[in-house]
Length: 238
Figure 1 (cartoon, rainbow, N blue to C red):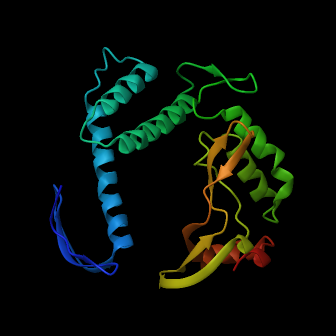
Figure 2: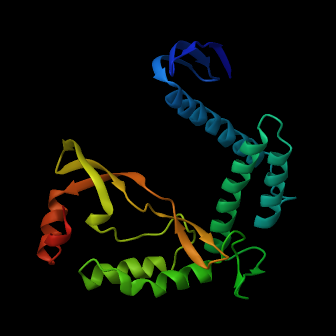
């Protein structure tokens, strides 16, 4: 990647061009913050590409189990000088999250003892402790329908990763709901989820932590609206 021209002035970039391996990017009258976000997105592509390169170098005969494959890819990324130190850290975090996910999903790999002395597959959290935390929280929320509650709770008890947990989100946990467009039998809205989804496990405090305010896209489906109204959930629908 190469930046051919850039002119900063009073928080604005008048015009510059970024040469990317796949295409050119032209920007005019973007704020510095917007430029930094764009640059961050482009660097994320480099991180993803580095992970893909490392993954492609695996030998199925040598790296014949999930732990060997993970350690091999991890070392390749650590040795990749095309990435900055911070980018290598991000890449390692990504592959470790995937490693933990597939160890639990496939019931395969090296186990460890967590802080509660339970045997678990995950390295950055304990799947058993996270599920227990979710179970203890069952009484603090409800969709208003037993069948839906049971389905969400069942999914939570089989969750593989802190960042992939199905939840019931009360409407009062959403802010700045804005209509975007309509298509077919649905209306699309944007909103800010106040607390955001679960993101990671805090092993010291033994609890799941949330990402924080997070932008989400909402879909109001009129056919589903009729179904939910029929089972007594009308008051929960915006």
